[in-house]
Length: 225
Image 1 (cartoon, helix red, strand yellow):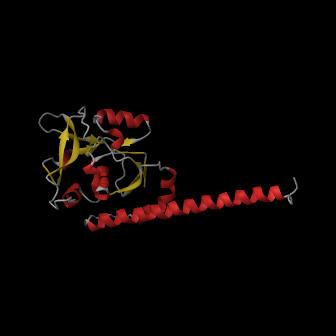
Image 2: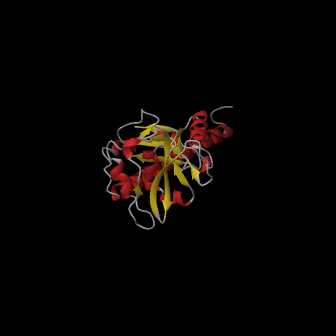
Image 3: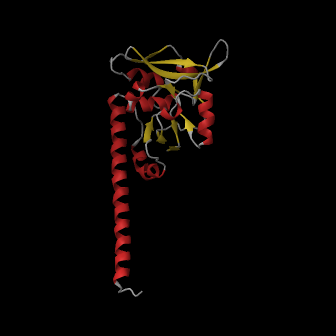
């Protein structure tokens, strides 16, 4: 086949057209994710939450696209408690009743099972909101996610989901299987949970082996700083 053959011209033209479509699709996805990033940032700031130096994360969108699965939340912005403490974030979340969130738990006793999470704003990618892990105990979730190359959501990360998608709690409650809270009297470890009572966001603790069809654990694929 010579370069002047009609078939060759058609093949080259088709290839160029497909490349053009792929580039257009990628640009559209980048634009959508940047808009989604900006909407989350707006949510956080409207709650009066200190977001710290967050603008550079917007430049990480291409990395997020490579880590996204169909049906999952592409990205969530997480503001570590080192920047905006639990006591500053949690009470500001008001659901349908507009009542201030409440917990009897001492946030100082809560810790993450992964000690290497960033102490600066970061993104978690390819987020499942817990629907894939309903009726599974926190301990079982941690093991299941590990086999899939994923991680269980912490208190901090679950709050990020609630701030962006409060409607999640209308479908199921969130067990923060990536975190633990220690009982000061017995020394036993429990799992912090978020739930809704009388239109108010609340927090309690549960046994790591408890299973309930109303509860699920957020999971994600990666952390981007």
